[in-house]
Length: 462
Image 1 (cartoon, one colour):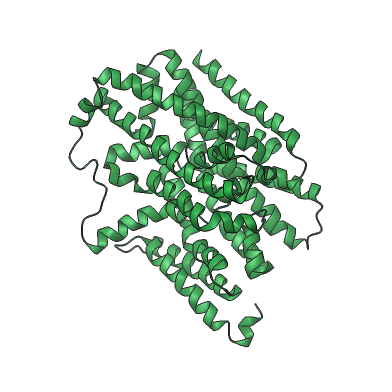
Image 2 (image 1 turned 135 degrees about the horizontal axis):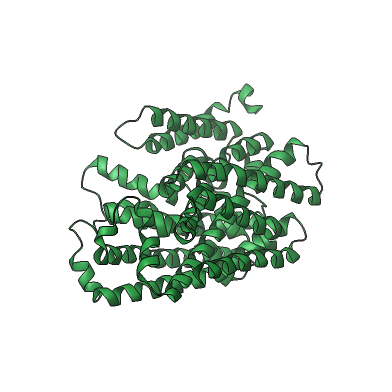
């Protein structure tokens, strides 16, 4: 019965993709849903940006191991990203009428920097998408008993199929539906578990001291680590195509800005549910907190809840992760077709050809992410690593493009190269502080220095 219900969920999601394909008349519809989403759909789409594997599996696993201090990155950093994007970026970007985030670099820095920046953006999505596919593989393993890698492949095919036909329209509609279901599913599961524990107070009385520590110790070293944890998603996901495309799909600049705020509040609130559920699981079934803590919640639901709870939980979870995965597949495909292939062909593509190119790019990207998911099964690391890559290379040039009066192409280039190269070097030869801390600082220095050096005639030609 459970397996049948999951298959029906998958079939229904794919059917929505084919239904939504009727609204896709061109690349603008495929990538940004025609910039027509009302506040409810826009908020649901932004809420669903990260509410998938890293929230339910990754964050709850890290919370069991290290308490609240271990999950600053997500959900707190993710909620911060949505708020900052709404306050500083949403309205400005919406009014520029851009199709992709790479277009911002084209407008402010020129075609060369557009292509280079897009090359920097695309790799960040490999790890992020792979993390979602790992979660889908884990679900398949627990429910059907098949190897994780087979579940990854099956899930990748299903998600790619409905994204290929429906684009952002399919993502937006499924986001709205899955947001309602996942919230109901988590609340009902928490109520069922609390009824077994005797109440929330009973669970909290057994929580080890330090579990809810939120602020760092009062020395510079710990404070820097704490700020970096906030920054991974809080700043690193700001220069990302998936957040951009979900926000820019809104029907107006006001809707774009407000939906970011509503989604931030909703995300932070609902993301607390998996953390509370993990405490209940630890209280009720302490012997099961062994090995891979990412699968603890899945195994608990299978073994200790009624069938109707299993159907609701797994169905909503699958829907949530699939929606997140589809968006992370569409984002790099858009960048490749619009900001790399299109300018390299001197804009000779018709809109129909561009749409086909985007869809083919999606197929290639899906295959690469699928391979990565089969090689690395740590969801939190896959997601976090992808955001750090964006932070150290793209955050400073993006902010400069919107808030610096005359940013230069050479400044943007030097910022991207210095930040990324510093991060790679310090990942190989680490220090006591996070490599992203030094890399982001060097990216800022590169931007300032590049702008200053651009006064020289030779560099102005860039």
